[in-house]
Image (tube, rainbow, N blue to C red):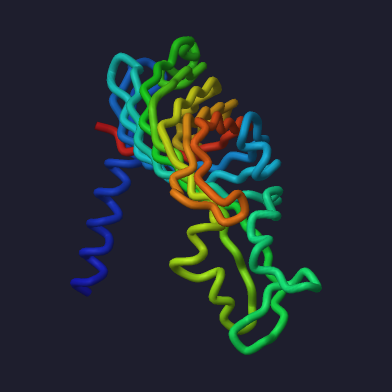
Amino acid sequence: MLQKAVLIAVLSVLWQLGFGQTHLRDSVMAVTTFQFGYSANLTAGNLSEKTDLLNNIMPSLCHKNRHNWTFELGVGALLGTNALETNTPAGIYSEVGIPISTEGVLEQVKVRFQGYTVQFQTGKLIVPSRYNKNTGLWLCGGLGYMRHKLRFVYKGSNVPQLNDPYVKGYDRLTNGLALNQFIGYRRYSNKNNFNFSFGLEIVEGFTKNRRSWNYDVFGPLPNLRHDIYYGLKFNLLLPFYD
């Protein structure tokens, strides 16, 4: 009985914090929002040499004040659909073009593109809806950090060339600062039945290969890179009203 009472009390508090909003139609309200975002992206610049399609899964936390300014911090996982830079581990291949494990077995190796990004953004609802002053056209931009590399996947025995420390000569570890911009629509429902944001996002990374030695080029890759991805981003919002 006590457990049920505690559960009801907790649910009641959550309802008041997250779902019991009032006056959304008439007032600009402060709200802290947990967001779960996904974007499907095309790549450009140097990033297009590594992958053509990029998925970004990004949970984030956003605060909107009573002047409709937003402040957001998020961490996203970058997952490439097709890894295009597949020639980097050429030195580990046998004469028949397949890596050999420690047991002398030919291994089929797949190359994956993966990474992550950390973003801080500030923005503003610049054209609020006449039906809801907390909803409307949303512009934001910010600064962040981008990191990515190649990952080699195989199912069988150990391939020593693709384990530490040797894999560092093949994985193309790259990182650096990134800029991000977003334009779209942000909606806080009057009835709180569906809160979301949706729009176009562009991220530009100013990155550099961080490995001091890459086996396939017999040295470092010192040139500055311009890694770009852009696409449609959707956020599902869970608001907690102040």
